[in-house]
Image (cartoon, rainbow, N blue to C red; front, side):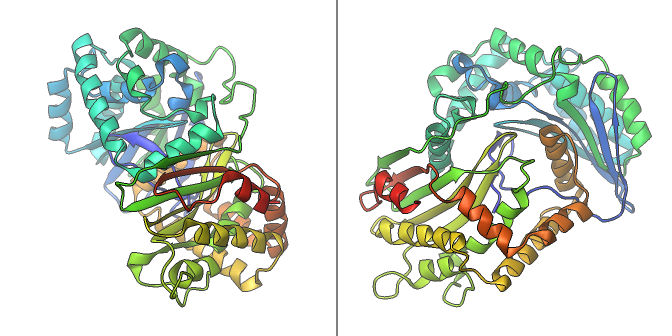
Length: 463
């Protein structure tokens, strides 16, 4: 499963990776003189469209002393611009019947709307206003500060997110990817208007932005709208490099938080994963599919073709489940990633049983003790999930925008399917020996962690 971390005016999302939702070649792209990419995909038979701006700047672009600025900006964009008061903005969107949304991830900031075809130009103008003319009034800043602190309190109760935030912090310690999207509470309290203006001036550049339109969209008209609404944005003085020239360092380490009040325990294991454009991205995806996912609430497992799912469902004392759920995940970034297994278990469970099962599964991949059928099944599931995950204009726009700002290009559906289909058993085994043997491992756990093997034991098992 592919996991993406975002914070915004909508719920945190988990999404699958890149492809398009239709085989019909209606995708077009252009680049303006200021470097802004305009991309569109026409969907015949629809009267609506999703239009949005994807920016190659998220919490990773925050300064350490003002961590949380990117997310803070997203909140303020809806509080009034130089052309529209907050009330006028809300009434305009409501009168149009448009649906407007925004979110911040570690590497991207996104604003998008879903609207009627006849209203695309007006919605593009609204997006331009939100991004480039936000008033950032002191009163609004203080009001949203309280809202964000409340949001931080809510995130602290989402233990899967807590575990992954801690995982980033230890795997990428003292680095930009190790910071949370919201930022620490003490810095949320100190972010000021200068921090927000500086972030915009530094990161909102034409060559780091893409205007995406999907649905009842005419590409040439969208290009003209982009020139009118975003042509004033400047280009970066020097080409942007997400990591600043130095690749992130992955650290093997652990964090354990003993909390006896929780009924469940949450654990994430991770090795360094693949970037969005890594040559072994699709091989990693197929290997991940072999490990699979499982959820006790679904009521299956004893007949699962996945050995790890079978162990999770029936491998405990007295043939009882030893986990409540698990998922093999990948989280990709521009120049690195995380990959591993996340699982939950009852507070009374022996965590060592399932950790040992995960390590055994990784060893099975390294030893080549997998079948051709497993590889083909994973490939089929992967291709199906790609199509099923992209079933409307918003999902397609999300996919196009993510690809363009993070990799600089967009793979066609044919290319994606060809790359998945080309993965062989030998490639999966070679990949496992490269990525899962003698590599640092990061561990994050919250709950009753007393039975979790220590970091030294788990590292030794990776040899």
